[in-house]
Image (cartoon, rainbow, N blue to C red; front, side):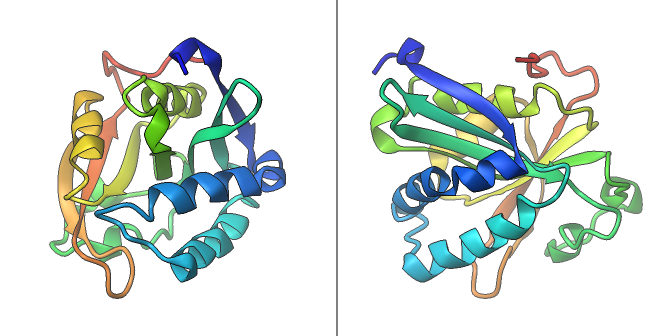
Length: 192
């Protein structure tokens, strides 16, 4: 299971919908683990949103597969629209300039996950770079569970910084809101 035996495919929403079962398999397995502990109902709700999100013309996804086609990792997101509610969910409000959106300024990274047997092989970084390789946004925004030490360490090493905290859905624990500035970043993802 070397890094070389894993391929990462970048796709738009229509292709992602055709491969929904692979995305769902990865998501269900990864987010059943601590600290997430998501159940079947959570996965069902996530993939109702996925079906809506993937229909956006700007939706992008990355899917990593091992030799033989086994799905091992995924990432997806889309640019945040001018009327996004993302910034409204922050516990402490941020400056208007930070929260200003126009449909092009910020790419919202909705999910990034790699199944346990393939972690620590650079696959998450490859998914991140492949997904963002063609993005023209100034920055990337994501929420991360603060007890997910590996995810936090990866995001920080890629240049993300914490800009706030949120409860992304009713009943959720606090999540860190992290931002990556893509303008002039030395670690800007390469185009695939």
